[in-house]
Image 1 (cartoon, rainbow, N blue to C red):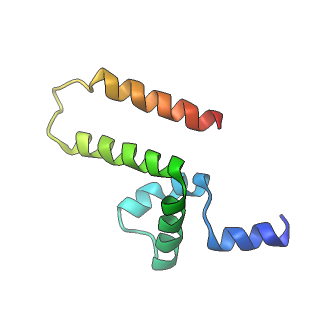
Image 2 (image 1 turned 30 degrees about the vertical axis):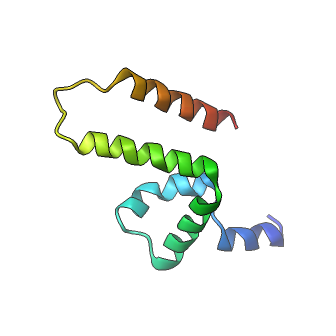
Length: 89
C-alpha cells in the first residue's frame, strides 16, 4: 500500500468500511474520531446514503411489533435489487 493510500485510509473510510462499522455506528459504539470519519463518508457518498436509508427503514420495520405479519414483497425485492447493484459496482 503506497503512502497516499495509507494517508487517505487514515482520514477517510471506504464503502466497505462503512458496511463493517454500520452496527457499531447505530449502537453508538464508535469512538468520536471513527464516528466523524463514518459520517464524513456518508455525507459524501450517495451509494452509502441510499444503503443507510434502506437499513434504517428495514430496522424500523423490524422494531415494530409485526412478528406475525409477512415482510412486504416490495421491501424484499427493493432490498435485493439494491444489494445486487451494490455488489456489482
